Image (tube, rainbow, N blue to C red; front, side):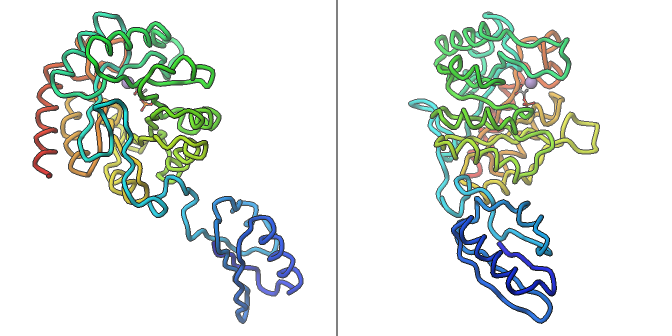
Length: 335
Ligand code: PEP
Ligand code: MN
């Protein structure tokens, strides 16, 4: 971290400030006295340094980090890819393409079991389905809640597919004990209490990027989970909010190679929420695979027109079969 001090700062104030930096943050402080101003360089572990506190000091002109503020999620300190093991035969980040598929919301036993069977046949490795739904309107379907979790477990028993489903509250962590991957939705990416509590578990966490989160904010949220001791974090790019209104969100394809360069965590892409339109799912999924995604999470419904949520972006099982065939073929051709 580099701190530029204001011109003509008295030397005794500079010395006091240096002492405070050393004792507060246990860093080494290098000092360069220029003609007009003095520059301090902080060396050591600067992750805990409060940059806003430094910036607020009356003798400070400007301050700049030269190292990212996240450590555990940072590839610099962990060069090899993290592989998150979900079950005996499903892992994410091991070079294979892990496809998760299923409805936006779990609606009934028949619905979830039928969809689970069909997506498995098409090559999905995991079943997705929302039981607790974060809906924009309080009047919209809010999910089957704990009954939805039971139905997902039933579908897992029928098919052997591990399940991924969204948690909304810290108080529900015990209820999610038997879920294979816990999803933190875009709207909860900065629910820091929830992230911290999930960090105390060993569960794989699918961390969606917030609607308007920068890549650094997203990685800092991963850091919250990892700081608690849980390294099983899977990042999910699901589109961000831009000025474009044609699509529900704008898929940030560049985020895939960027995050893979900055971090060792696996990256999954959600082309369904990124586009909001079923016909866009295939091209976006192909682009994500080409850009290096470790997996995809795709919404599939047996009757999209009557789906209780996100029908417009849901593929039918038949469409999913076709899309899956193309994405696996693309992945194969990249070897
Ligand atoms: C979902 O996966 O159904 C969902 C609500 O996703 P997101 O948090 O990305 O909007
Ligand atoms: Mn959805």
